[in-house]
Image (cartoon, rainbow, N blue to C red; front, side, top):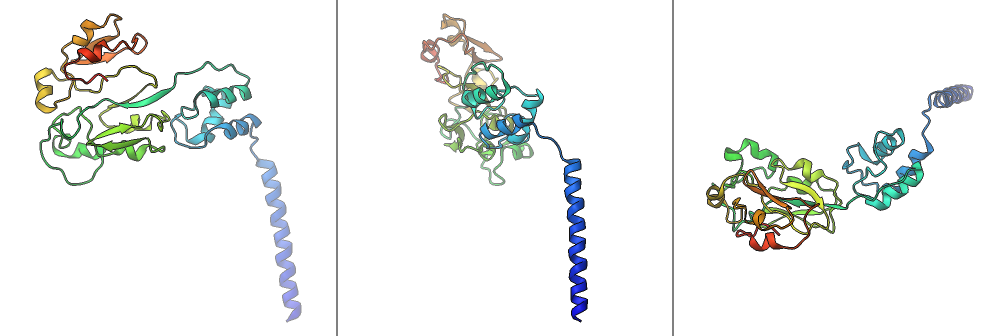
Length: 262
């Protein structure tokens, strides 16, 4: 009996040694060489794995940068500080990029936006495509207020306040996930220091806008007519501000009768 136990132990031990040898051999034979720069870049990236860069996490971006498929400033969360470190690793000069922040183009709070009916059900903006009228709010361009953008944000930078999404500029990393998620494309990335922005997206004409929301752009063109710097133009009944031309004088906001330019 003792001999049997010893024999079994010897067999298990020999089998383990053989398997260990083959595993070690296979690991060495088929190992994938990793560029040291990739590891170094991964160490300086934020590690949020938010996907805002367009790749599957920070490791995906690091690999793409080393291969030349992504720019050294490809991380929107890290911004210029991280881009500078990555540039040093890659031996490239990095031009300073403009810091951006997400902005919700809607002023339709609960007291201003009209509703067609009371809704009870799944609270998800993307699910509203299955709901009559595309949701309970009367304005088909306004924020639905069910928080799909909130769920998409990894940085707790956006919340539903008084019926519409609000971004905390101090928390926002401009990763762009909320922009991708919003089914009505109400969120865009704008310069962090933008002096004035238009908080509306409706393309309806004046009367139709006022029928559904007390705070919509009516396309009156007073902002466009009074801007001395050709920075504001009304296109498809909605005002747009060219941030490169805007000087922050405030005339457009002063003249706007609906106060949707802030």
